[in-house]
Amino acid sequence: MTGSAALELRGIRKAYPGIVAVDDVDLTLYAGEIHALVGENGAGKSTLAGIAAGERAADAGTVTAAGTVGLVHQHFELVQRLRVWENVLLGREPRKGMEIDAAAARAHVLDLAQRNGLQIEPDAAVESLPVGVQQRVELLRELDRNPAVLLLDEPTAALAPAEIASFFATIVQLAQRGTAVLIVTHKLQEVIDYATRITVMRHGRVVERMRTGETTVDAIARAMVGGELPVVAQRRPTQPRPCLRVRMPELTLDVNGGEIVGIAGVEGNGQTALVDVIAGLANAEGIVEIDAGDRPNLGIIPQDRQTEALVMTWPVVDNVILGRQSILRHGATIDRARAIADAQQIEKQYDVRAASLKTPIRALSGGNQQKVVVGRALIDDPALIVAYNPTRGIDVGAAALVQSRLIEARNRGAAVLLVSFELDEIFALADRILVMYRGGIVGEIDARDDGARAEVGRLMAGAR
Image 1: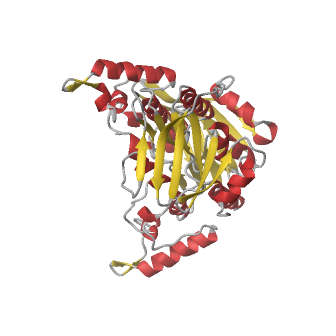
Image 2: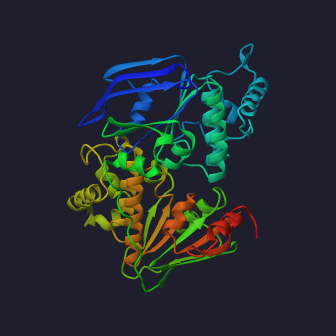
């Protein structure tokens, strides 16, 4: 191993009503190593990380750490209205007498960022920052505690490709300085590229331990799901018909029924504003027209399931109703029998793992929450589907299932607008690719053309 044991978990068990999340798990992290923890959604990975960091109590087992343990969450736990330096040092601010020494705090955070190769503006309001920069703030907050062990839960789920490379450069430096790093992730190529050892969990238990130099992405995926991955549905020829028409001063966009149009681009180039306008959540100068025929007009998969798609304290079945009240209305009330039937259908078709449909959705893993969001968006067979990072933070098996459902909807004649920061996903699903840069569409690419990937990358970087 790289160094001495920095974190040891022995016989860890954690149960919730109706489900055993972690069952007799042993795990050792060594100083200076990058260790990957992988598994299907609901396998117990995040629960185990929370126990290791001391944020959750285990029902049984022991946790032994050689120093401070830091945890960077998948869903950032930042105070949005505070500035960067205030978030990094919250509760640990330097003081001058009875007052916070703001100048010293700013200087400290700037020095911390520079030492770790992270660019940051200490006085920026966190709510004004793109997701990738907020990730740096979350990481800096943990690094300021000088952790012996750093646990990262889906650290690159919200990052653009260029940001991922920068992020891992920092992580490699930390490991070289002796920090033990555990990465909980579904991105298996990142596991191969950066980790040295892999622990695979399934249904709360460790099912396999691997070394990255002795395995492949496909072998890891098979270990995660306990067999072969689902086969993604194939496109079938369709008869295109106009469905979505957008005319704005900065862009023109058309999506036909029976096609998937992918929107590529570095995050922060207007994708969110475009989706909000199409979904009717924001006003803009111009025209947005949806020709739905006799079908429900819009199914939407928002980019952030917890803040934009779900009410976390509500049960699964009520979240299936959310946004579909007009469809489920029966007289003056909601047709609960149909809502329950719909929730059961989503649970079965998307392999949603919940103790019951009455379980608060916050008790589900992030991936299972996402499957509920996707199932709800598609269950009424809408004419237009807007899918914003639909497979972010879900395992390879669930991602293949979601992608199949989108292709099947396209084959049935739905118009699908796919906004994704995963270029592999764009190229796997899209019939046409539009590239966004600084709020406008700067190019259209046929995904099947030779050299298409290089051309998309060039346009994403601002080349004309």
